[in-house]
Length: 335
Image (tube, rainbow, N blue to C red):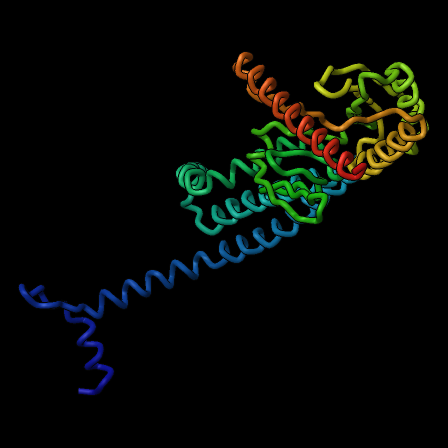
């Protein structure tokens, strides 16, 4: 018997299953492989078409994303355009993948895909809850625009200039050059102070005058001095107000307006303090230090009087003794 006939006879054998033994049927294995190979060959045109469709959607998604970016950039919303363009690109890409899968596997209906995506989206939502919250918060921030890139804001304990608004976080640069990355969810759910929301911002400083000074004249000098300071805007008035009666001085509050950016506020603040101090010195107006009076034995008036009488008697005896010694010395010199 030749070898081919032997192989053929082995493949044609179909032995019965034996209990307790591992039965291997080579004919069934080859039949399965042949079925899979036939199915693959029949599906090959669909697979090739699905790959072409997927590649086409990759380029289409990039084109649509860039188009959205360009449109929003022309409207002055570049940051929002970057975010929405990326979202649109991924959305078109998902649609292309779904279409390619239905072409490659005709038995796979769009309803099955949607059902599978629904289950997957729930699982992904739980797994990436924080990331999705930050992403949605970033979209809302860019849509509502409570602040823009370049604005100076305060979020919790951080203050600085907005550098970027990304899908996950808002990036600010503090005034001392540090970069702070704040999650968008925190920014959206927290009170944010936008210091550069308007063109001008008000600053104020308290000046203490001695009670024996002419405070009306001092207020006039303070107002005129601040109005002449470089950087103080003339569009809004400078105010000097009697604000408080402290223990050692009368408090005058000075208010002025400058540009709202941090650099302008700090520079003008320094000039105002320097010029008002100089003006007060030239006018001879006293700016007193805190005064403290120490009172002893204030709890017992009788004891305080006794201590005072005792001190007075002691001083009197000392003076008398010194006077007698001086008299005795003069008598000795006379002799």
